[in-house]
Image (cartoon, rainbow over all chains, first blue to last red; front, side, top):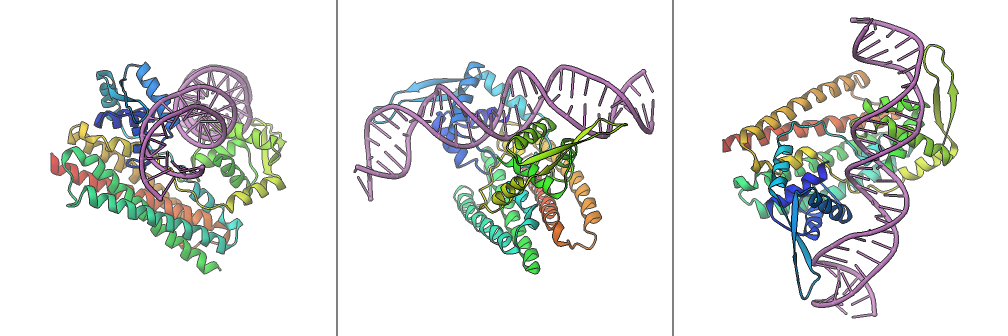
Length: 178
Length: 178
DNA sequence: TCGGTCATGTAATGGGTTACATGATTGA
DNA sequence: TCAATCATGTAACCCATTACATGACCGA
């Protein structure tokens, strides 16, 4: 039930097309949510059927026409109701940790190689996040309307840094075994 | 495709029933994977159809009979093949952060209440994790066969601590707005 | 001419959640 | 007597992924 609120939430900030939403999911909000375009188009239709959204077609000459979606009153109300619920315990699914839990089955060198590669990939991610941070919040201070972006990207960088630090720790542990 | 490897992985450590697996998913491995019992029974059947598992029925007098599953050679091979793959970028789904991204829509007091509640819940989780750590690794040093447990619980506590610290940071940011 | 971007979708399959179902034993 | 634990599952539904499909424009 959460994808619908991700969609309603993005549309509460600005009206946009399914294509635009897909871009957001793969870029700006990728540090806390993700969705495929196929899912998004389906969800938009369902939300419109339920009266939480409506759209208007924008004809374009040089590009394909597009459908711009925006919230209805019922849509905003549904979003606000959901926002007022209590926090739920998070459900973990971390495929890398699942593998690490089985690393007694492979030689230490292979475990270390896996961790080094994961660390490198996360270092690239954190560089991009820091660039984004500096562009959007150069004074490290949000205006009230952007407090959500500010806090979620802050968490994003802390999360990735925690992973990088732990990779180093884990590499150290495997190195002693070799 | 990852649930199957979670199941094969647990069964590589000890043969057990679907019920036992369910217990593991809600307890020992809950900091990196989760699954419902309905899913597990379906998956066990599928894996057995594919020849990666087999089971034997254990009759019990005072309790219901049970099916004890164990890996076949093909099952162990499939697990090892999967373990040798490269790390994939993680896919984030964090419902709490999704809400935080929209907290400009609600009053700061409500945002703070949400964060305080989430922080409290995570403090309880980390206490339990620390107890588990002290029981299993009193000297903070794993034997090679338990290196996976050692590293994943270490990550688990770091992850939860990062969340708690960030909650405090976010509460501070909202407090200045009030 | 070839790949990338813009823009929309359908269909099939697979993974996850919720509701329903059974039935014995054990402890409060 | 009532709830919890042990132990298994089916069915319906919902959510997520992958493959397939179309077609114009733009820059290398």
